[in-house]
Length: 297
Image (tube, rainbow, N blue to C red; front, side, top):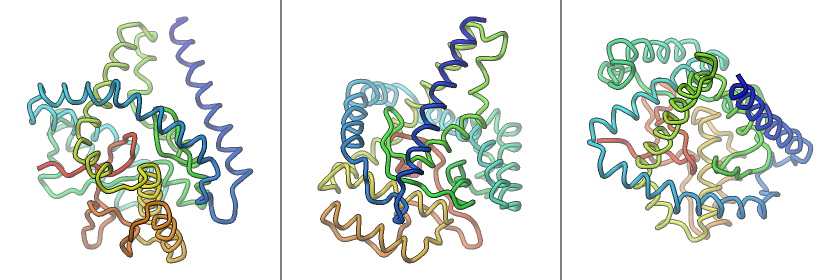
């Protein structure tokens, strides 16, 4: 029982810290909707810390995982966590009044959970049910909540006050969040929960090896590259690809200033697929850079 209380208190503390940052962000947000990077000093220091953790722990573990894990097992693990995430995607569809898309994502979850053996096989993709990307941060943006200043969080990476509080909402929609409460929050259940999350992070990090090379080779200033890519992708997702022209131009100007390179006339990431008559189809993985992972062959 004491372990359960400790976990609850830790999560309440984290939630309070995030909420405090959101309040501070709202209080200092300018008319430019926080695109001016007012917290650059903190952000650069935190990104350096995250990079050190990645180099020392995550990347070596991910390389080992990638080396010993057969492709069909790797794909199955990715599909399993993606399927669990479809619960939150469906709820956020409905909160954004996307009823048809919500029905499609609910169908994805039901089909993959049953026919797809608990989600390890993406049967829904085989019958042409697209994978959508909706989260609580996008839901807040849909209802007019400003993003606030760009913010890099320890371990989580690129974010903003809106996306930070959105991450709390997404956690509440993830079944893994509640596994500690099963069987009185016993040590075995807590170990399973921690293990599952570790596998999720490792699997996601392994899938991003190719993306990492793109970041390293394409950027003059790695920090600015990640910041601009993240902001463009979030704007694209919040607006379902229909980014207001003034926001698009502002993001492009900042990208040009931050990296010293020319940008394309679109706020959409290059590897986001758009199907006619449907919402953006993209990978739903959460990861430290928050850049879309390369499509699996």
